[in-house]
Every structure is written in structure tokens, then in C-alpha cells.
Length: 178
Image (cartoon, rainbow, N blue to C red):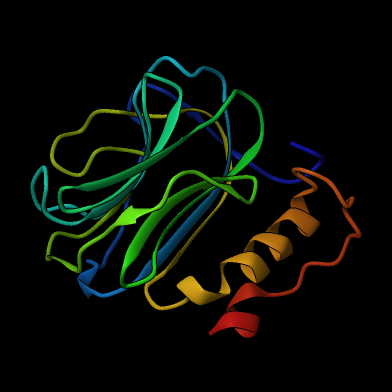
């Protein structure tokens, strides 16, 4: 994908088990550079839920929507195939899904608490919803929702996803936003 390294998820059983849980969240920013090959299957990006409506997640739906949730609050926006920057943000009041920096409708979110360790590339309650396509980066912040535009701009500059061109400069996100 634009000459940068990527992990290929084959839609069968590829996922990464995280060694930490989200804990109690009053804000979060989850972002991923991913190139899905279809818009017709459920594809888990990141999932920190203990149960269906308990925790947070970023998922691609079989209806061609990016879906971000906190407990029972769900926000969506549409996506297509190919390399895109997917972001889910909860700022302590509003929940919004973004594709390539463009947000869908914001809805009221709720603070959430979950204790199960998270997963990248799968549903957290049962091993399903495996993504199909190349994933290049997943960034999980539990307190950086106010820096969304800067984080997305940094990622777009490096991966050349939706304009401005790759300058070849990779500003370390953890140094910039930690």
C-alpha cells in the first residue's frame, strides 16, 4: 500500500491479542490504516468489549459502514474498498466515526468500562469478524481525542492515503502526542 509495509489479514483466523484492557474510559481515539477488499462482511479492527454492549470497538459492517461504539451508543459513516484511514473518537460527550478525516453524524456517547484484554482484527467476545485486506497501522489512544486532526494528518502524510503526498517523513506519533 503506497510502498509501505502492511500485514495481510486473510479473513480466516488472523488477529492480535492485546495484553491490556481499556479499563474505565471517558475518552478515546482508535485509528487504523486499512485496505479492505470488500464492504460486505463484518470486519473487526479493534475490540475492547466484555460483552455485546459493554466496552468500546471500531468495526467495519457488512452494510459498508465504519462503526464505533461505547456500550450501546453506536456511530457510523460509510466506507469503500482500498486503503483508507478509519478513526473512531469518543471525546467524553460525543461519539463519531471518520473515514479519511471526514466524520459521520456525531451521537451522544457514554463513559465505558471493560476489563477483558482487547483484540485487533477480531471480535472480542468470540473469534469472528476477521478482516480481509492489508492493515498498516493501528493506534489506540485513551486520552487524545482532542488531537484527532493532528494525528490523522500525521498518518496521512506518511501513508499518502487521501492527498498531500508522502514526504518520506515519519513523525513519531508517540513522541508527538504522548
